[in-house]
Length: 623
Image 1 (cartoon, rainbow, N blue to C red):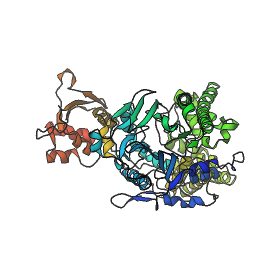
Image 2: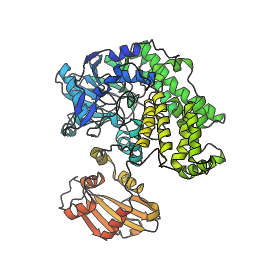
Image 3: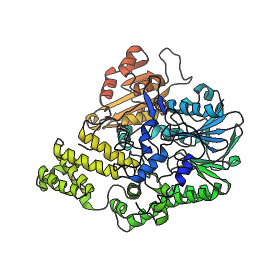
Image 4: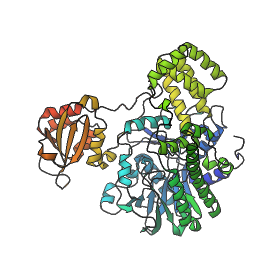
């Protein structure tokens, strides 16, 4: 890393610019006293980088761990370091516009209190969500009340498609994504020089109460202008970039541009390690070109909902151009090498940024990396198969591992050679070959210990925060019991799902092999209250679920061809939400009279028995 500009202190000057006050202590609790945010735990970053961390990642974490209230320009203020993301306050004629209210109610409320303590008790006059990821809307109830939004007193602004994407991203593979997110952010790792020291985009995620208030004002076109509380905003839609629903927005009178999460002080993810749909870096680059065309000549500062702003028109343009070029280069060169016959893994080994981007601190792989992003571009176009028929029908991990270990002379022989590789510093090879031993003999103590050591050393060397956390979490799993990933159901997100999304989530939980010889029809009347008082003030929404051939098909309305349902459920949507969140069960609600069941009660029991319960804590580095 000697090529990096270690004497360039501009990022530190920018990260400290406009500082007004810290939250002291920076320890936030929920109503029950549980700690949901502790930024003081990162005080160790004030020390010099130890041998247990990558110096570049240590530098990034020192910058990101700064917390407090900052002035971007007069009239725009940010509270940073109270979550993985930042919350922004834009002052208007009567009050303040809140941009991206973090993940949790508690941290958003603390940020608003810190702002008001130094800028006065201004009322919140509007909320703006820049995009559909949880860390940009989940704390909304910490800054506004539902009643004020419902009454039209406080508009909530979001890009077109926000609500559908906000609630659907984790519906189908939610348990797997949450489990892997625990590794990505090092959720259960101790914070310290040998443990979790950040994730590059921020330090970690808050763990308080998550909420969602639906938008009341959609941004539907680039160039759309809105004036709220005297604040004029010009919007640019950027769908399919860092999020499927996202937008940049400009404050012309303040000559300030917010680029949401489309340009940060790190290379971002084309495919996040927790799992998601592959993003399009080519479109990402095109939208940043459009951003420059629309706003470069009228912007003196560029800021985002992560990291620190960039001041000065020339510096802002260079920052946006280099960010644009990074995503364009990543895409175009990965495709070029794909067309030269290289596979994703081969492209990842070969691809390097040109010198100017290689030296740019904001293009370093602290969160996304050139390595795993290149593989994601290959995956986007070519899928999982690299074209080699030897990889077309491989054995699954355990079966392959047993064969590898037998071929290599048994577990002890493999470990003996792996220890030699470890001593020689070939940690990547150690991780690969010892993985076979662990999947062949999961309880082999020597294999678990050596693999944990290899993961730990790889984690210490990693420049990427998520890579470090994955390696260290893997080592922790090998050395002790599986570290559970905290999962906190968000009632607001469940409530925002459409009925079709709910039934689709049931469909991916259906155990097809056990359901293969069953045929069931269930009629759902949602919104119906047993006492005749319709809580939603409208006719019930009718759906029919057809279970046949191991597949669950949701159909709006009655069953086709007049087929008689086996059972009919009548219930309020709020009751269905409570069942889905795990707060209650269908049998309990039937007994309580809040669910009316007609027809064959056994049909509902059979259906419920065929739905798998997700395992939120499945092992990752062991079979």
